[in-house]
Picture (spheres, rainbow, N blue to C red):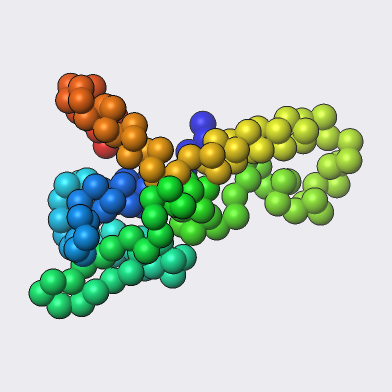
Length: 154
C-alpha cells in the first residue's frame, strides 16, 4: 500500500485547520493540535518545516501563533508534500537510474513512472483552497464530515 507519512497527513490537516481558523490573527499550535488530535510536540516540528518552506510565519507573545503567508489558492498539496517528505517517488529506481543494473530492460519501470506522474498530477492540481471548498460542501452535511474526520484519525 502506498502511504504518505503521518507527518505529511498531519501537516496538510494542520494547514487546513489554520486556514479555517486564522481570521486575520495568528492561531496557537495548541489549538490546532487539540482540534485535529495531533500531538503538540510533533506539530511544532511540522510547523518548523512549513515555516522554512514559506507557507507560514510565526508571531511570539500573547497575541502570537501562526498565520499563512501564501493565499490558499497558491498552496499546492504537492508543495506541502515536498516540504515535509522531500523528493518522493513510488519506487527507488525512479530516483536514481544507477540503482538497478537492469533498468533499461525493466518491464515494470514504465508503470512506476506513469503511476508517479499520475499521483503527482493530482497533488499538483489540488490546492488548499480546493480542500477548503470540499470542507465547505461536507460541512453542510455534518454527519458525512464526522465520518470523514474519523476515517482520517484511523
